[in-house]
Amino acid sequence: MTTEPVKASQSADNILRMEGVGKRYGSFDALRDVSFGVRRGSIHGLLGENGAGKSTLVGMISGQKTRSSGQIWFDGQRIDASDVREMETAGVFLVTQEPMIIDHVSAAENLMLGIWPEKGGFVQWRKLRRDAARMLADTDIDPDARAGTLDAVARRKLNILRAMFSGGKLIILDEPTAALTVEDRRQLFDFMRRLKDEGVTFIFISHYNDEILDICDAVSVLRDGKLAGGSDDVAALTSEQLSELVLGRGLKLFQRNQLDLDRAPIAITIEDVVSARTDLGRLEIHAGEILGFTGLPGAGAKELARCLFGLVPTQRGSIRFHARGGDAEPLPTTPREAFARGIAFLSDDRRKDGAVSQMSIGRNISLSSLGAVSRMGFLDRTAEARLSERYFDSMDIKAANAHATVDTLSGGNQQKVCLGRVMATAPRLLILDEPTRGIDVGVKQDVLRIIDDLTRQGVCVIIVSTDTDELVRATDRVCVFGGGKVRREIRGGDIDAETLRDITGEA
Ligand SMILES: Nc1ncnc2c1ncn2[C@@H]1O[C@H](COP(=O)(O)OP(=O)(O)O)[C@@H](O)[C@H]1O
Ligand SMILES: [Mg+2]
Image (cartoon, rainbow, N blue to C red; front, side, top):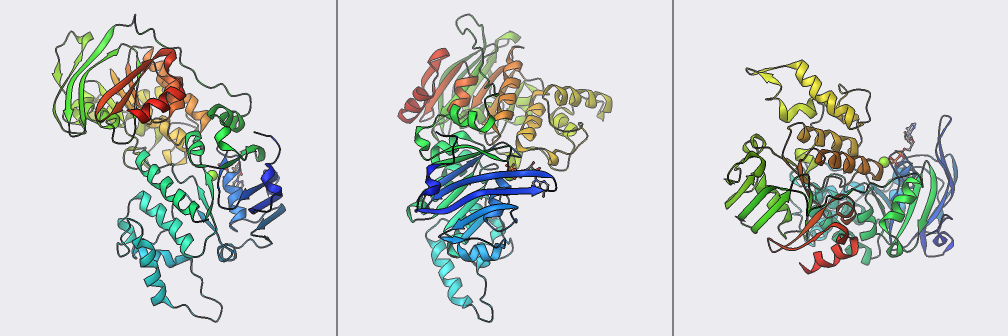
């Protein structure tokens, strides 16, 4: 790692090179003196906190934005224009968070959106349509499907394919994974690797260390509009080093003070859970414990979590809350029943189960607790406000007040709102599926701290996660799943990144 511009910037096999690039908005320097290079045929990560200047930089590379200073070379040519069409013709394509898709035409026709007819010339549309269909035949996307019917991964793939179809050499993805599930993300990465093997270069913007370490060859980090560092050898970097580069030295990474499991009483016993993809014997959870569930996709961690919340049908299974002196009861069969029995769940599917757009932060928080703040069917607005304010304040949500709509918040702050929503139901067992996925490192520490605080009041937490860093910092014990069963269990100081990675693969 180095705090100098990466050495590759001088090398001849750079497809892109920037020297002293800057961007001013009025008297504000959004970017200052940025220089680095991107190797041909590589996946180059671009990291930085919200507002660091990532989108501004790629906006200039792709011709969306004019630059205030510095020079950019692409494929041996100096770029003087700031014109999207000209850059696309040269082979640079930007895929933003909201993919550019025309919903009412077919997938194949969407590929042709990047084809600019020559001035005075004409385009052979019929041949193009045939070629587009042929390109899609290699993927799992139906060329004739109306684009509006495609799911999030397919839409993202379609944008990448559109770039390829138009002769894209450098494809820039600006936070493509923020709204994707873990499985979606894996598919997208496989697809990118395949294209990389065919010689395509990527710039990949992400908040997520694990993703960067997984898919990138090189990385550049922006902090406050300046290049904070970078590396040509991502394999040699640790997650901590990346975080430190992103946040500077001031950052204090969260580390849970782990529970002494030998002394903590058992609070919950789950037994004999059988569903299509789980087969669990017996699992005991200690009072105030944070228990990690991890495993490869399909190993059963995610499914068991959903069984416990009544989202996945089970053939049998029971749960017993010891504190109630209660007996073992069958698992809930609906989320409503689960809530009523003190089990809350936060899904990893932020598109479907995330913050409700255009609704206030406050209402988003109280949404699952409206019954508790109502009297005889009428909403008690004072009680609702009190509940919302409490979580709004304690979570340090970055907005003027709880009346603002959630749409103005960053992804990380929206996730705090969702967390507030499930916490407000006062659960005894809180299940969180990938709670910090896609949110920036600083807010991630806040979220982990909030979960940690909650367990001090005796609440039990299950975190389903594929983020080893999160498991290491935040849990007391980790169950590693394979074939629907808990294959291994590690606890306390034994939970480290290397062990987790090794046994997850074996399970
Ligand atoms: N059109 C604009 N006018 C003024 N300031 C802007 C504009 N676009 C971005 N900025 C500012 O420039 C900085 C960098 O923004 P951006 O590139 O979007 O960051 P990132 O993508 O890393 O989150 C931020 O402080 C942002 O508020
Ligand atoms: Mg951005």
